[in-house]
Image (cartoon, rainbow, N blue to C red; front, side, top):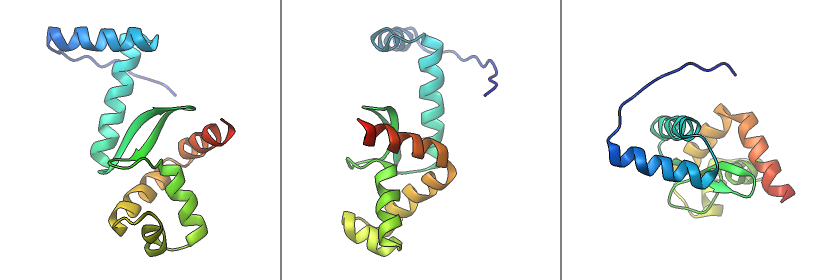
Length: 120
């Protein structure tokens, strides 16, 4: 996917923090910055969705829970309704709708995350 160059200013202490995190992950600072920026923008766009490291790399999950978005989508495919899916997780339906909205918007990414976790 084509990229564009964006720049921003951050405080010196935060730059050092970002540098340490990039080094720990064996990434360039610009790569980690791009990842964090993208993920934060997606978290704003899809409230209730966060990102974390997993066996297969970074994955979308439901914040406050240990459940990946792909898992919610799998349960929904079996349950066939939001209400039954919400009952399965003992969550409010709004949380299931949020996870499903993200899964619908990022079908390929969710498919890859599921494949990586199932293969592990």
